[in-house]
Image 1 (cartoon, rainbow, N blue to C red):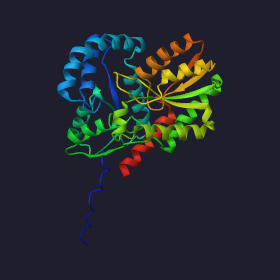
Image 2: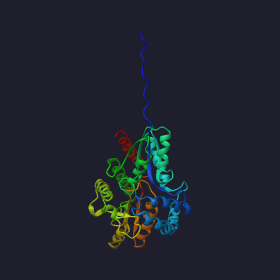
Image 3: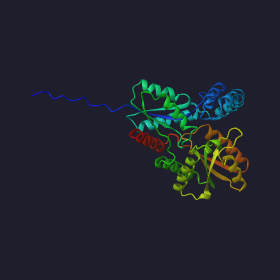
Image 4: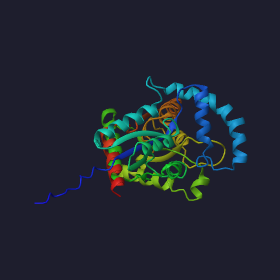
Length: 326
């Protein structure tokens, strides 16, 4: 009998997941912070102004003035292992890796290290056939997610890349946020009001069609509904204003002033636009805003980001698997 020939079994494709965050300085030093801010603020997606106008302003006004202030802020929250954003992003990647054992899961940063561009190039050199890029921005914006898309477009040669653009109303992610709020308030008792504070952006960008405000509103509505909150029990606000132009409103600090004037003395705040804790949550909200509210006789209580929690890792792993299949 002639020998039957069998084709060798096909090995499964090598798949990688890149969880991409905004970025952070390498150290809480003036040089490192200035280098990071220069890269971040040079991106035309972040500052959508003419380079002829913006670059001189950035290098001769913004960086000399903002750099030293930002350095002090980073130093105030720096962990023994490094920047909170980098530490928690790495821990989150590790938690997702445990749920996707057949994949390779890596953290990357749009600005700073490990650079997304370099991570994608290395995956290509190592022969990965498929890559899922998951920006750690639940709500899509041209100022954040689209910048990740720019890098993917320029560095995806030879790679099959799937990108998760938005998960602002993903049921598993919503459930993870809801459970984190519910469990925190069960341990500490609920405050008199709940603020949902998101990073802001200039109103001009929203007027030009950026869907970010609507995505934030959709997230908050889903979370508030799942928590069973009445409309009078919560407020959607925006933080991190920069410059003199009009930004998304209402502003978190202004709303806190209004709540204090109404006699509220214990307010909870959560930041579901941030996947992991960082400068904006730990320094701006939990320190600056809390101090300002305390000066008016109140207590602002910060509910931490999801960080590397089991529910967060499971929600993002499921998102990655759907993206790979799609």
